[in-house]
Amino acid sequence: MKKITNIVFFLKNFLNKRRTGRLIVDEDRVRREHYFVDSRLVYSISNSPEEKFGEFLKIFGVYLQDDLEKIMQGQYKARIGKRLVELGFIDEKLLQQILLHQTKEIFISTVKAFDIKYKWEEGKQTPNQAFSADLPLLPLILEGLRRVEDYESIRVALRGELEATVDYNPELLRHLSEIELKIFNAIKGGKTPSPSDFNLEKNKFNRILFTLLALGFIKVKKEEDELAELETIYGKLDNANYWEILGVQVGASTEIIKNSYYSLSKKFHPDRFSSLGKKEKEMASRVFEQLTRAYETLTNPEKRKEYIEKFKPAASVLKEGREERITPEERFKEGRIMYNRKKFKEAAYLFDLAVRMEPQSYKYVYWLGLALSKLPGREKEAEETLLKAAELSPWDAQPYVVLATMFAKRGLVSKALKFLDKALSIDPTHPSALKLKTTLEEKTRKKGLFGFFKK
Image (cartoon, rainbow, N blue to C red):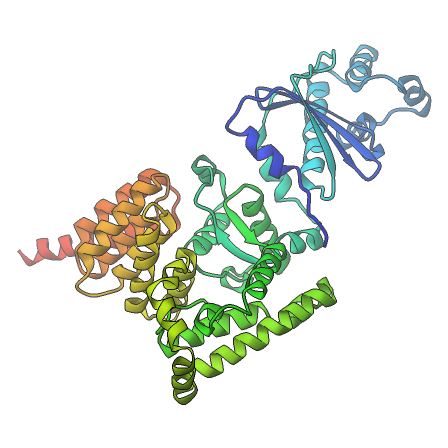
């Protein structure tokens, strides 16, 4: 399986630190070196013919005679530049512009590259040269990511299930473009966005997803993780009962069993593992057969009754002891299935079970609050739960946005605006918060004018 290597996964750790040293990057037969002081790029060199000093001279309209190019061979670009200034080909200001542009473009070429090898040398001093670019790192990273054109590598990097992370650097949010932020918020809200949702061409959409991935805003559940899941469920087939195989609690409703089966059978369908090898496909085939058998048994009243009677002692033990072994993540996944089907009451119940097992999990607490916000009469519970989520993740504006939306729908505009102000104090660019605040303020203004004229 192709492993995707991009330097941004390494460099994003520089953004909160002051790193000084040299980064050596090898891409095929191209070697680039980048020098940093306090996490700012000061110098870049490359052995690529397309990235030599002479090529950047041409970009700025400076063309050297052949004999002069030969004279300059083997010289450092800064020394060449000084010599050109002395000879009157360019002035000092233009020289600085060319060197700055060259340093920037060499670094962006590194950001755009995949399948690279790199080495970091902490504290390595910059070569003795007069020029220093002193460029901030983040804008260069973003520009490089937005220029990536290796769409096949992007596609491989994104292969899997996308979900938002909860430990991203909140300072990076304000540097995202409007469309990048919209796509991130859609994923953070539990949606699976598609290019058509944002009127984007597929490659551009995938490039945005890769930008979010590289900067740590989202993560991808990879095929390797699914293979590990396959091996886990395969290993327990002989000893697990049908409820355990389907990942639901004993006595789960037919609806929950169906949703779990549809999700698992899709995930572990043999065709999805055929490219990995014969062994993996055979494992998936057996898992798929057992999932189907468990589903057909537990959703058929007669077969279900017969199965329970046959394994009554085991079922009893499971209910008293083993049921507790179901992980909070399994509860959460069941809850997400119910939520997506707009079964908010059932979803809230399952999210609550997950929270009881892991009360400090932001993800579980947030989704419990989100489900409660959809239920009439449970506004107080929703508010308390979402405020708890906000405490667990103080850099995330989303809990406040959900609260604002809940109270706005119930006509409590002032309370909604209060939560929107909190959300925007955390993330001033949050599109949903900005849109809702504009709508509420417009309604309030019109209502005020109406009341004035009525008087």
